[in-house]
Amino acid sequence: MDPSDLASLATLDALLQESSVTRAARRLGLSTPAVSHALARLRERFDDPLLVRAGRGMVLTPRAEDLKPQVHDAVAVASQVFHPPERFDPSRESRTFVLSMTDYVLLVFGATFDRLVREAAPRLQLRVVPNSTGDAAALRSGASDLAVGIYGELPPELRTRPALTDRLVCVVRGDHPEVGERLSLQQYVALDHVQIAPRGQPGGYVDQLLAERGLQRRVVRAVPYFQVGLEMTAGSDRVLTVSERIARRLGPQLGLRLLEPPLPLKPFALSLVWHPRFDGDAGHRWLRERLLEATHGALTHPAARRRLSAGDPTGRPA
Image 1 (spheres, rainbow, N blue to C red):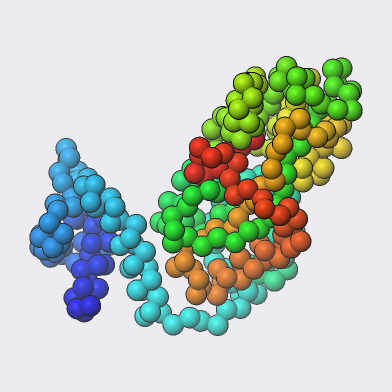
Image 2: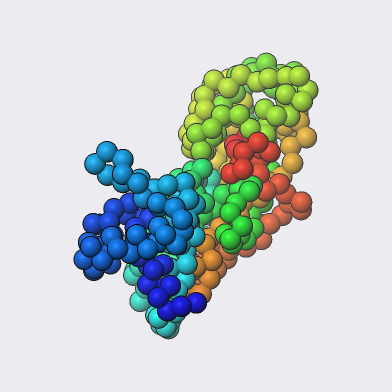
């Protein structure tokens, strides 16, 4: 690689991230004419305009959109070469990590994870955001540092580690007038359902299995939070299909009964996901290890599914 290629790569990254010659120049500490000339050379090299005028601003071409994450990753990795790693001391670490996860993850092992981090790294800051269909893009861009969730197809460069497995059960209120010790498929379909949809997308694995049998359930409440879904079920005659770990943790105090589902529901796996740019980051690696320590022994279901819905590459709810 020609040494000038590295400078061109940094310029291209700034242009793609900013979608503006002026802002890219400010970001790079260069003059606007210098970046404008660099853009002209890049356009010639890629045989593509890269940025085109749209009203008073500029937008990326499809080719530039494809290049954007690749270039940003390459610049991030290259920049690490010139910054030798410092000795990591968790007791002095004060950086902020952004984690993408649901309230299910927080309720199941969040307290243990928090204790492990708090005891060893009291100054470290954690900011948790909900899972979304954009988790992979957020990890690529650096907007998120770690994600924990149910994922199917992910960009091939992302790293994954299984964190825990679980299975689905049904819950109803303890004195439900229509449901006894067993829940039949006929009863299950006839009841109104609460559904937990962390990414805001209704439908999913259960609905697919029912459709295969020519059946359909009536979801009257779809909510993004597990505790809210459990509370709504406890105060009604509805049924909720939910993760067993959280049902056993919160169900008794809400007066809920656990029942076996009347469908052959396979166990599922939650994965820890991160971008490889952090493989050599001692602080990031330490945090990953604490997450896995907090879920130690939670991989209890062999051959667990990596997604809950074949039709959704990021995994859907039950």
